[in-house]
Amino acid sequence: VLQRGGTFLQSARCKEMHDEAGQAIAADTLKGLGVEGLVVIGGGGSLTGAQALAERGARVIGIPASIDNDIACTEMSLGVDTALNNIIYAVDCLKDTASSHDRAFVVECMGRDSGYLTLAATVASGAEHAIIPEMPFDLEAICTNLRRRYQEGRFNSIIMVAEGAGSAQQIADSIKDRIGFETRVMVLGHYQRGGSPSAFDRLLAARFGTSAVEALLTGECAKMVGLKSGSIILTGLDEVLSSGIRPIDQMMMQLAGKLT
Image 1 (tube, one colour):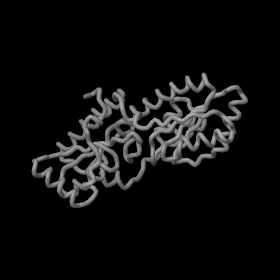
Image 2 (cartoon, rainbow, N blue to C red; image 1 turned 90 degrees about the horizontal axis):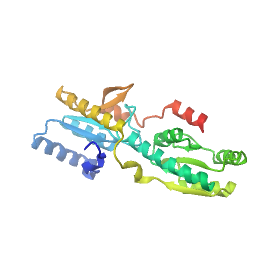
Image 3 (cartoon, rainbow, N blue to C red; image 1 turned 90 degrees about the vertical axis):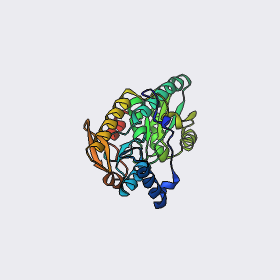
Image 4 (tube, rainbow, N blue to C red; image 1 turned 180 degrees about the horizontal axis):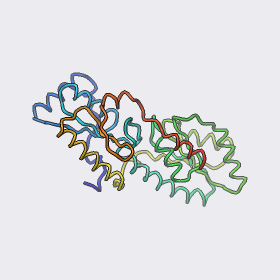
């Protein structure tokens, strides 16, 4: 299954896990089936469910998987690198069209509460601007920069927008109204979530999975595996869930400001 994305597991949200009655049923089911250890792969909702099961006696270890890279206590979650590569490929293709037709493209990426994907894709693809939830943006300043680029003979631009920071269509319309540029919108949507996993994600999944099983075998419970400075670490689920959204690296923000 190395060549297949995690969606082949066919997992989905379970509304019954949102209340205590459903959580109790799930814990009793695991016990009845003789399940000695459970590895939960997912984002904040899945890890919250894992914590609830652990509180009811199930032995659980979590693996962070969220393309938004918004889970605390790990530098990288499963799926992030693959999604980022998908975005960069799409932007590279768009640059060919933008350069040949003198257009400004506004590209909307996933990221309701975290702008990691958008910011990293901006730096890696050479896009001109990044609009993310963590940073206020000045549309007039962006338009001023676009006008300057146009005067310098650079007639195309890419503006990356995280879905949580605003509507790509509204931003594109505002740019067109202010400076008269022909603008186009590309909402990447679920395209970002598909495809064959990158080499980095395959290796990270192998490391996370092995470490999760080893943690269960040594008696660990109610913890999440994570990546820190190249090493795999264990962090209590209570700490992960109470830490909120993983903050964006300040150096990445500085890079985006200097390189765009």
